Length: 124
Image (cartoon, rainbow, N blue to C red):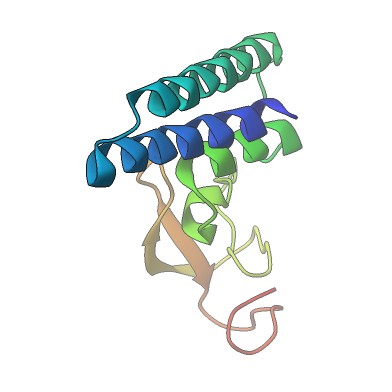
């Protein structure tokens, strides 16, 4: 398993432990086992994250961690570009307009005002 996979598995196991304890209130031993497994996965995720060299936005390793921590929505996983560009076609020259969305940093997501090279509908 990769570090991000361990992170996701730890979260899944904690949810599983909560469902064991809450509705049935019958399995503290089973819940303890699941919580211990979650702790192991969380520790392995921490080891993997600590060993990972720092990555620039848009690198595969960073994107994998962003997806693991924030989920798989495009808004959360789309890396913010270093310079302004169209989110659909990558045009660096502009002119652009805000799409109404924002990157995780709060910066506006931009799209071409005219002549976007992306297919109709704005998805590349």
